[in-house]
Each structure stands twice: as structure tokens, then as C-alpha cells.
Image 1 (tube, one colour):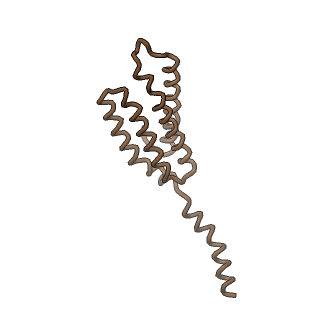
Image 2 (image 1 turned 30 degrees about the vertical axis):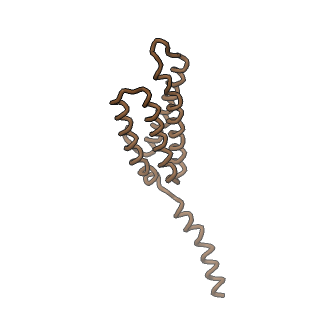
Image 3 (image 1 turned 180 degrees about the vertical axis):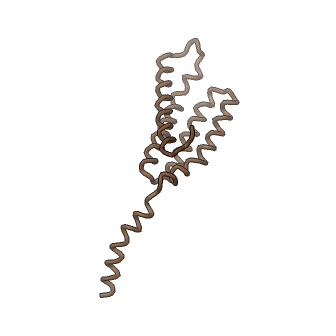
Length: 137
């Protein structure tokens, strides 16, 4: 009889314990973004100082990787979804940043317009994430 009572109590409490372990507040999820984004920001400043358009793709990839690394630790569904979207947008920006290397006189305007749309999409997604997290931008 004692075993049945103990088993009933365990069966009742187990889902509650699992739910508590799996939940992550927005604030806790957003806090995980701080260090990787600071590191990526340092890389962006270094790239800008160098003035090398070729390093732009590398810098964008560093941002994407920073978001991906933080995203691996985020379990809050709303924040995780936004982080994944922003990481994908940084990768798209990196993949299309080659247009910046071209000679301005021979630049493919269609590719430049595509790149601009990608950057606008990236900005919108990142702004949305920052707003969810209360990050000043």
C-alpha cells in the first residue's frame, strides 16, 4: 500500500518537476545573448577600422555564429525562434556580401538591391529580437 501511495505521488509530481526544469524566462534567455554579442561587436569594430570589404563576410559570419551559440542554450520558445531567425539572416548577409567587393562602376545593381533587402530583413528581425529582450539599439 505504501508503495502505491509513493508511486502515485511520484507520478503526480514528476511532470511538475520536469516543467519547472524546462521553463526559461525571457530575461534569462536574453541574458545568454549578452557575451556572444559583445564579442561579435568587437569583431565588427575591428573590421570597420580595417576598412576591408573582404572581412565583412567574416564579421557577419561571426555574428551568425554568436547567435547560434547562444541559441543552443536558449529554451524559451519565443526568444529561441527569434534568435534562430536572426542567425539565419546574418548568414544570408554574409553569403551575399560579395557585392560590396565589386568595383562601384561595374557593380551589379540587381545584386546590390538583393543585398539591401537582405540587410533590411536582418535589421527588422534583429530589432524585433532586441525589443523582445528590452535591449537598447
